[in-house]
Image (cartoon, rainbow, N blue to C red; front, side, top):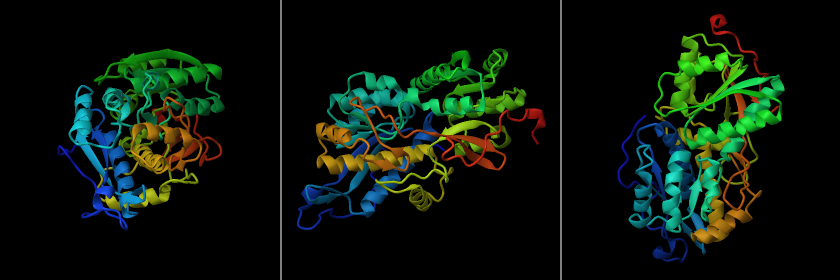
Amino acid sequence: MAFKLPRRTLITTAAGALAVGNARAQDAKPIRVGMTVSSTGTFALAAQSGLRGLEIWVDDVNNRGGIAIGGAKRKVELVKLDDRSDKTLVPKVYETLVKEEKVDLCFGPFGSTLTAAAVSTTETNNKFLVIWSASADSIYQQGYKYVVSATQQAGTLLGRPGIKAFAALGVKKIAFAYLDEPFPASLTAGAIEEAKSLGIQATMNEKFAKGTKDFNILIQKARASGADVFMPTAYEGDQMTIARQLRETNADFKAVYFVYGSQPQFLAIGKDAEYHFSQTLLHDKINWKVTSGLNRAQMMERYAKLFPNAQYAADFQTALAYGAGAVTEQFIVEAQSLDADKLKAAAMKLNDKIVTVTGPYHVDETGKQFKNEFAVMQNMPGGPEVVYPPEVATAKAVYPVPAYKDRK
């Protein structure tokens, strides 16, 4: 669902003075958080889903009176600008956030492609950047000082739960394909490494270009490779197209794995979504013992209240962004400052001391996130179920999946 963002948007839950106790109003000025959001293009659905998660955090913080720094509670203002899914626009837009909007810290845009374009600007201007969705390992290999992934696990780790699940099912051969962008490439590289370590053969490893609409040749190559499982990694739109084309051509595999396969948007394609495996951090059966922020049920309740007319339900991107807000709040409380150096020091000090709706928090000195591991889902005819790991599984995986001709 596309929407037009004004040049400057402030999200608060109350107007008027922000003074607390005897603190003067200027001592309790709002904490200004800047970010870009895609109103159109490849990343629009995911970006807007994440935005709603961050808005839940802002609403919760402001309903509690703000974040205490130096004895004064300061509310949060979220300043969001449009990046239109265009990485060439991102540096300039973040420069606007920093130099014209005077934000105190930044949240990244959706995804590795756009975030990689934002980091140089925030770093040059000594602004702390919180990552909530970008997972490309390359971001953490540039020597940046002020980048921390609050909730999003590093890309090379993301594909491992699915491979572990398939190994447990006895899978021997997997055909890999990926969109030629940092996030899909990182996930696929890590998945292949994990597969090899578990004795699973990668029968294909092929990239495809952004803008590809016809995936039939790729599908046929995967089938010809003799793979048990097909694992094409891309963003939601491409994966939904691949799922439709698999069914249209009766291209049977014993299983197909889509990263976004349990997303509300993906499930909306109906029969084309059935039996596919996926991964998520948000499911009504996945409930962490939260130490920071709202738990899953509370977050979902707040989502329903704030976004009653949302086109889609909350998804794992909503949870990632909300959790990133909750983690950032702890950084600020610990640092008692909005200074980038002090926030980074707080981020390191809080390792293994924060659990949010998406799980435990732990980063290394580069800001790379190692926890918040995804659970593996399968879209059963009655809805998605958790099938891995065993500790949180709600159903036994169906493997091999029924042939298309045998599905009702």
